Image (cartoon, rainbow, N blue to C red):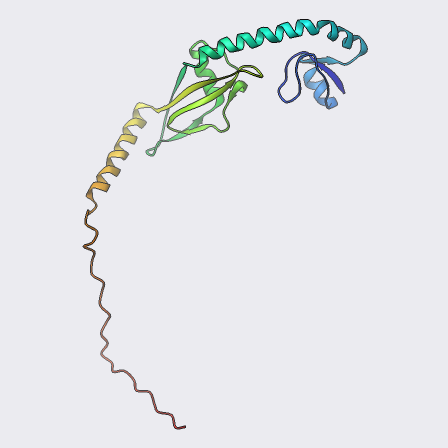
Length: 196
């Protein structure tokens, strides 16, 4: 099935482009959501007339995305999570969590635009990429910190491991002597002589 895209769709094409897609994908997803129209001769003429409008719209979206990228460069999202003693999270921080954190600060970013390869599962500070436009990316700093209860556990575990390392003997040359070979009470057996 051939369709003409009305919106930019990742891994498929750009606005105004004629693409060939599977029948089910076209009929069940692209056409009902008004992301594309059927590639009839009449629609092809309409798209050619609208090409200038599409180019202006594309340029406007790119400029808006660049402005938003400049604003997002200084943004830090702090996520408070419950953790274990070693700093591993119970659960994880996903793209949805980052998107909600940005929304709480007044930046409405769709979760699909947050580029996280894998969810964050360890405490720390991460730089997360946000795809605002095909050509515009921004980097947001995400801090994953423990909640108050977990912070006390992590600090207690760190203090305990520090105490263990301090209590180990510093001089390892004074090792325990090797045990001597056991002395047996039996006499060694004499081997019988063979006559040749």
